[in-house]
Structure formats: C-alpha cells, structure tokens
Image (cartoon, rainbow, N blue to C red):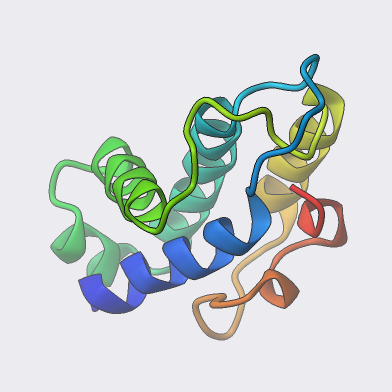
Length: 118
C-alpha cells in the first residue's frame, strides 16, 4: 500500500508542480510542502490503517517521501511554482474539505478543481 500511496502522491504532484518564471510565486518546494501536507493529512484521515502502516512516523514522513519522489523525477525544488500563494491556499483548503475519495487519487482529476494548475 505504501507504494500505491507514494505513487499516487508523486503522480499527482509531479504533474501539478512544474515550475515557471513567476518569480513572485512560492518555490516548487514550498508549494509541494503545503499541498503535500494537506494531501497526506487527507490520506491519513481517509485510509488510516494503510497510511499508518506505510508512514509509521506520520504525515511528515509522507510529505518527505512525496517530495523526494517528486525531485527524483526532475522537478527543480527552487523553481517558482505555476501557482500564486493564494492559488496554493485555495488548493490546500479544498483538499481539506473534499472528503474521502473512493480510491486514492492518482491523477489531478482526483483532486479539487482548484488544484489543477498547482
């Protein structure tokens, strides 16, 4: 299950956070941390048994694994994200209130519309 969750995190966030030239936006690392924290918290609440087995150290371990997987796929942690801070905040909020999906999201379509750009 850990591979499924980590794969889901990487697939969702690698396709979401690619970096841009918008120098006033947070870095990709900052965006991944914020969105990943919300996403991992949602996973932990929705799939607690599997999540706790996969990430015994909790949500922070999940976020670190997701960020490591994303950067291993070539995302520049220091690039500026495509989203502004307010867009990231909206995505984080919407993940927090989205409820539990029937399956672990593995594409952006599994996340709220506000997350499609970031």
